[in-house]
Length: 358
Image (cartoon, rainbow, N blue to C red; front, side, top):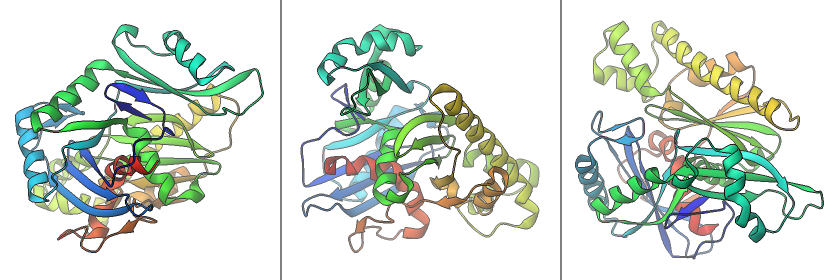
């Protein structure tokens, strides 16, 4: 699902095919850029660029210092020799609402004419200040009702993203929704996960985004206020660890058994959030199956012991998901970076860059 020039499009919409697409993810921990070439008919990851963001330059998704962030993005793109002006970016967080609703069965065009009225019933935002779109999930159904995914994004969020890109000297070919970009890459790499009820948790610097999927359809998204920053601060404050040492832990260095309690505490927070989302899904829609598996991605998925702690707590299999599990990678695409270390951070930008292959 994507906003193109401030108009949200549906997740399965066709976009103009271009040879290469740049997915740009400006996160609170890292800036990530991915170039995917679509010229051969099968997407190929050509280039990866990644750089840390200065502390507190971006807080809870809000850019606190646009000039600093713009300079960092320009420097990253220049050092990686990424010269494209058009990029694909995403918006997310509490100012984006994704909701599965039912509507009287009608054509796509008829639904577009009434979607704002439907949104008034479901979206807790000022209707005059939102961008809206929808996707009919069962367009070929014959019942009187149809299942629809409704998306609403505050207009100021979209405008802020566009203003930052303008400051950098870039244009937005597509402004996507983070949850759907994550799903785009996940579906490409894990087609076997498109059956039953599964969860994808993208563990970022400050926030963990949880997508619940039912038979491959993203039906519920929750942002949990826990990420690797909280764990790093725990280790510094309660264990007296230096910043570099704490960073090594959250980046996947071997975990000292004495630190396992801190990982378990953060796993408990995540597990509670996932359980509540799954319980809400059970009560908010027709009965669905139980959560069968959890997939982890994002920088926090590298934390030693986290996956096993979540598996023990939730009593379901937990798998680390990689955005290049079934994606062709050109030689040298990761440059001097270790693919095993960097790949978990790239599910979102890979999902963005895959859009032209939709």
